[in-house]
Amino acid sequence: LLIAADELLIQRLVDFIQDFLIKNRHKFLQQSPVKMVHFIVHNNQFDKIKEAYLEKICENPKLLFDSVELPFLEEDALKVILKCDNLDMKESIIWKKLVKWGIAQHTMLENDMICEDTNNEEINTLEETLRELIKHIRFYQFERQEFIPEVWAYKHLLPDKLTEDVLRCYLDSNAKPLYYTYPIRWGNFKIDSVLMNKQAALALAKLIDKESADGTTSKGSRYHFNLLYRSSLDGLSAQVFHQKCDKKGATIVVAKTLNSGGLIGGYNPLDWNGNNVWKQTTDSFLFKLDCVKSRVSAKISRTSEDTSDYAIYCSKDYGPSFGEGPDLRFIDDHYTLKCKAKSYSKISTL
Image (tube, rainbow, N blue to C red):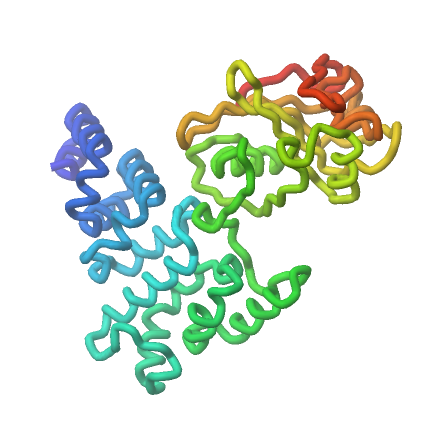
């Protein structure tokens, strides 16, 4: 009916049906996930429906991947799903589901086949089936302990030398992958924080890249977030802050406001090493984040070329300090911030 209404240019009916399908997307994906995915893949003119259904699948991948209908999903439709950065499922599980999908395409293949236990013809058949889809599996994002049972066992399916390169990167944490690496998928993204959730961290990653911080984005992250200092565990001490955070490179400082519960903080792309030293940069910023469920709204403030000489202040007497105002400064030994806009612009909503 929707396609017919679209062809007849009955826009009011098109809008009504689209709104109905979007409003009831969870129910339709529960009932007929493959049918709905095929519809959005083969009818690109309905952008609103495609965006809404992909967002729901990425938010709850089990609707599709745990469905008995999965073996009937077309390759091009599966490829669309695998390309999504916001697919909230561990990469090893996605890989298992893909292998099972590939095996299901051929009745002669065993359900639990491992490459070492099969003949060359079976391996070649499965490799041919998965060839274009394997490109979208993010093997570098597997957990180390998953490598042998989940990757090495199927090494004959993978492109030449990819398995060895993934192993090399596991053994050497400083090694750079030889193959293209995708952004960190939401299901593989981890952050050790009692203040920030995954969506807030991904929003900050986008701000670092000078993009809009939209909580509904389909992009993953290029960054790993490592906890250096937590005041509730390490204490409110400038000395301890510098012991843990100096010479660590780029850092994000986050605090939670008592009244609103929102997050405020700043990004330092340099480091905190030095005493009574100003550091110049136009890449630092201050932020305020409000997180409601999976949605993140952000306000941000940056320096200009004229004020960037006073972007970062490093002092053993203070915790993190931004701007000459000081625009944002964490005071030693108590939960006090000083905020006086001077080096950074007036905060703006993104």
